[in-house]
Length: 270
Image (cartoon, rainbow, N blue to C red; front, side, top):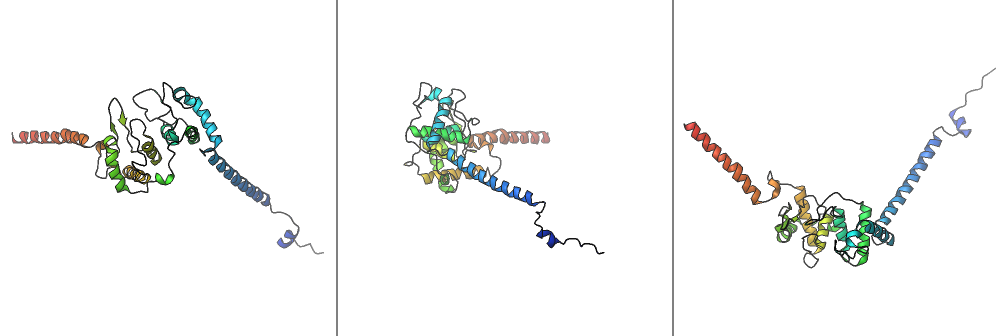
């Protein structure tokens, strides 16, 4: 009596049985498609939330403004005795002041100082949207104007003519009168530099497009980014404060070395 032969692989396929890993593979494919769809939906939702022209963003910004800024600037940004009117300052002013942490102010003083940012990027855009809705004003610059892809040589010349008297030729900052100061530009984003030029925060003058064109502003940002990325190729920069710090260094260490050498020669001869 002959035994029945074991079923071959081909016979096993004809039975219609699934491979043990088939269910796992189907679940994995489903999760991949579901995750991809959720990511796409989340991205589109986030972009819609940061659209500063949408009414939803403006309404959200108004709520944030009235909860955090109205004490000084008024419920409708009209200003009070403790803060100026923000009508017409534009989205750029809000993005700069709030995006650098200068607003809300920690305390009253000669000028608002930079500190850790208090709001998320989406909240900052919402606040900017509300203020921009009150009246026309400078907007947040396009990315191509702040990417650092301009002419650094032209930007260096423009910076020396228009900005170096306060910010130092190397962007190291400097002291002004009555406790005020021009901040260092060694670690500032291109967007915030552009916004400062068109809004004139603190004691800074406003450089409109009639004074400095958008292309020239881009060149200035390019120069500052070059300075940020190429710190003091000649050696120790001494704070980049110019001839004062350099002269003090020579006075203390240079003359000190000469005096020490003179004393040593005199002692040697005796």
